[in-house]
Length: 371
Image (cartoon, rainbow, N blue to C red; front, top):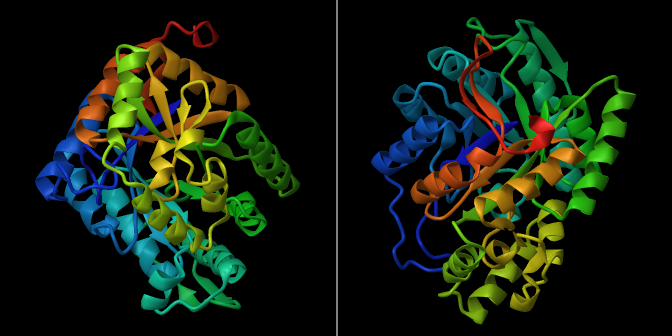
């Protein structure tokens, strides 16, 4: 099991949808979050991308020198970027971090943001572009010289001089719920990430993608993206969850939901369909809460409860085939401690030397299935 944390390059604080007690996105603070995750034994951290986030490759380069074992999953958008240039970024960071780099390959879903970056492709065309992008990216990192005259990308004798220590290339994390996205994931993903949907929806998606990958002779690992609110009692956890959205007004929810519906993302649409912006429909199952999705896009659900209860819910996803969790919580510094102190004792996983495969720290479990 891999358990990753999140670097909040935008919007961290004690309340959602409010500037009250918001935290500045300073290098010192983000370094504190990364060092804490490293010290507590998280496997890695995800760095997001977008116009409302700090640029992830620059930030990852600043953070790797301040941590020892943490893997950096850096969001890499395919649209508007040369795959050869992106390969050089990944190779350089992988070398200076001693093999602690992965990418989260994304296509982009906000038409306004994409237009601002000069990208005017429709949804399925962006996935065609991502497919070509990853073809080139993977091959040049393997050491090949690549010529491709594709529909969206044209390169001739593309190559890089300095290869990464991670062979054949840093791992590719990938998400997306549309048919086009699943087709690209089947061809290229090492780890497929789904949003934190209820178990039956995650099960159906895993089965579809396994079948697609098997038809290509590939196997894929699976992960899930959740927020978390871990406390010593159920009452304290739910009180904290409700406090997080206590400053959100109904007009804020309505505005956020309108903006999120404008995104060209099937995954986002699936998140919104869980509650349709209705605050009375936020509890989706035991310890599964959709309150984050009232005002935040994409990953909109949280596991809420005691450490033992959250671990039990996580193991239910493990039973489906999930072995990777990418987690976040507000504020990210304090919640990293809450989760590690309360949930880690009920799980079994190791923080590894990612270059040599040696387990550096090991968290045992009370869960018999991992005994």
